[in-house]
Length: 145
Image (cartoon, rainbow, N blue to C red):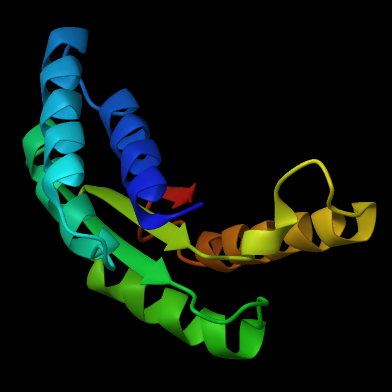
C-alpha cells in the first residue's frame, strides 16, 4: 500500500468516526483526491495529514501517528514509540492513535497463515499495551493502517 492509498484509507476511517455528514465527507474526499493528484511523487507525511484532516472532522480530538519503519515488527523498538505517543495524547477527551507500517507483508491473498497469525499477535500486543492506560484514556481509539 503506497502513501496515497494510506491517506485515502485514513480519510475514510477518520470520517467514519466523526459526526459530520456524508456530504461533508464527500467534499473533503474530493479535496484530498485533488491534492493527491497534483502532488509530485514522494513521501507524504501521514502524521501531518491525519492532524489536519481530523481538525476538520473533529476539532476537539487529538491524534498521534506512529510509523513503524522496520520491515518486520519488533516490540522492543515499537512499544517505546507507542508509549510516548499515548503520553502525548494525555489530557484530550477524544484521542486517536494511528499505527502505520506494522508489517506491510501481512496482508493479501498470498500470505502464509503463520505471517497472518504473527500480524494478529502484533495488533493484540499493541492493543493490550494501550489498555494499560485505559483508566487515563477511556476514549482512546487505535487505528491500524
